[in-house]
Image (cartoon, rainbow, N blue to C red):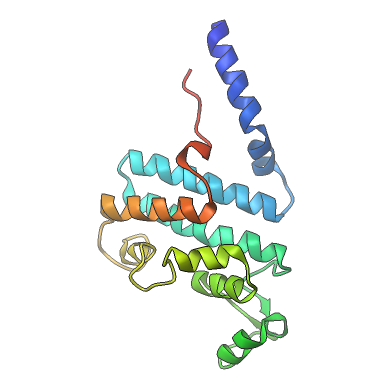
Length: 184
């Protein structure tokens, strides 16, 4: 390997070291969950480039969910599959009172996660709504029609790109912020 290639690799490692450390961490923290979400977004970008769009959208959907789960962990909700009903804001307790509970806890889905974040006056929850990702016709809905979820429709390039753009905005990052592998 030449000196120029070594320098490029060293520069790449230096700038990406914090994210790589978070990804390698063994503890389950909000920071690690956020790092994993960003890694999923980067992975989705590679799938869009290689035209494996159903795979890209599946990753973007999971990244959207992981972002909410990381933020909810910061609010003291470490498991969205077992949210204590008593810890919910009053408005959501009223709205969700008829939902089935197990041991006094609710299992929340992606839309529920963001509804809870919004009720907690969290900026991520508000951004989700501003991006209209809470809408039935949002770019997230493309995932439900995918063969990898509930449907039989292949994901279009436009749908994948629209969701990718929305998830970048949700995560408050740009494509350049994502972990990319150096070309040596």
